[in-house]
Length: 265
Image (tube, rainbow, N blue to C red):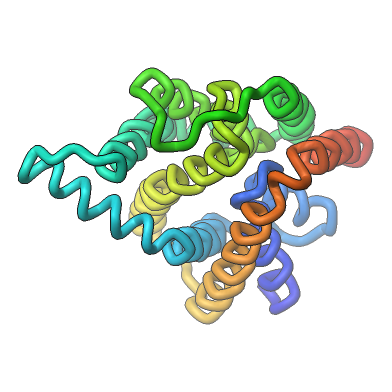
């Protein structure tokens, strides 16, 4: 990969990872549209690791509080809202982790077709719009219960379909459960940490078994660019989401899906 490819794809992945517009769709489609060679699994894992660094750093205070409270809930049976939120992140991660492990081969070979990506971008984009305009937007992430967490966690399984958007579908589920835009986004971003980590571990294990060649300079540049752009994406999304709502992202998703159908199907 040359420097232009690395810059475009790393920044694109970082920005889109936490916006409800599907980073996986962009990583699949942009090289196809521009006639670039596929960047490969190693690069995809690297830029996702950059996004993980960004979200952990951005929520470092929340993560630290949850870790302390979670340990206290185990060692001293103490109950706190941070401790419960930590448990809800663990529980919410399980459905997608299990499904990703069981279906990883089928997803990679079957669901990367452009028409599937276009349909998911449009369909789940419209669902996001419906959830946003009908949401009560009264609850925060500390008011979640087990049933809510399982529903959001199961919705995250749909993100295995490129074009769905992991953040998009979990924010959609959160809004449908009456969460505010801010709360749905925060829980979605916190939920991203273990799922990105788990996915990275699985993909790294695959790289080791298949002896995939690694260009460390390219990977390091991709990690840094992805981390910076992902951090900016998180910051400005949370800052502007109450003012903008979800409509701009819905419009973008629909236009993206139509463009895919015109150019690639």
